[in-house]
Length: 306
Image (cartoon, rainbow, N blue to C red):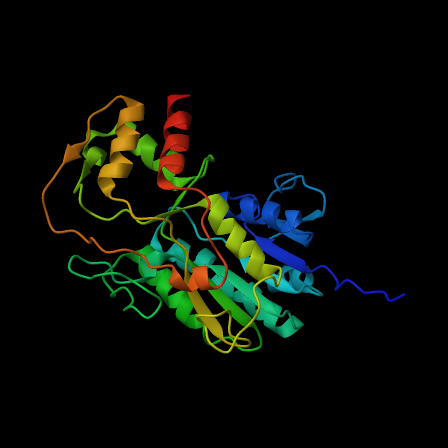
């Protein structure tokens, strides 16, 4: 009779564990059997799920960062301020993230999964489809895009970790901090000026459940490393991967929001980006989105009507 030894389950540190993306990643990791250290700033705010250990502190504090990543297999970073000036974004999203990433590298953590954004790409009118080789956003693209772009470039220089940069576009899914399901619709309801849109402009999107599924698979080591980034994360290197659902336009999104709110959209003419965020690499890694546009917008409308 032979016996097999099951490999040890991974220990994964997740920053921003009470946020929209972070909480879903924590749940997806727990469902995969990982032990999760859920980093939050306030006690009692981490997801209350078996296998999840709440860790309260500032990940930008080198002492706390070094302690929380000690003995972990993977670090998942999800924090970037939803609002605030460029300085706040630099201090929290950029510098703070680098503190805990460098602590992870020093501690011998094997993998980093960083929640980046498709906003790092140049998506001005006239630019076509965008894959991982596409040009990055110019310096005048705004604080959020430029700081996230520069952070990606800084993470590419960190050695000692297999780094994966997940680049989602607009993230749909319910939650108090959900930009596209909650905060943006609130602006549209309150201010007529926020209802203006060029209907043909592309609305690249992904549902938070599908994004979290890929993040958890990579973080848990369920996506094998490869020599070619199109086949998997390259060991010891930095691999970006786009994570986007099917094609959509602003007519789809604004139409759904304004219908649910009982207000009228204001359609405008003008130049607009009409390409797509291509996720061929993620699909070659075994990822397949399960939430289609009708489901995502139906969920959004149901939430707004309630």
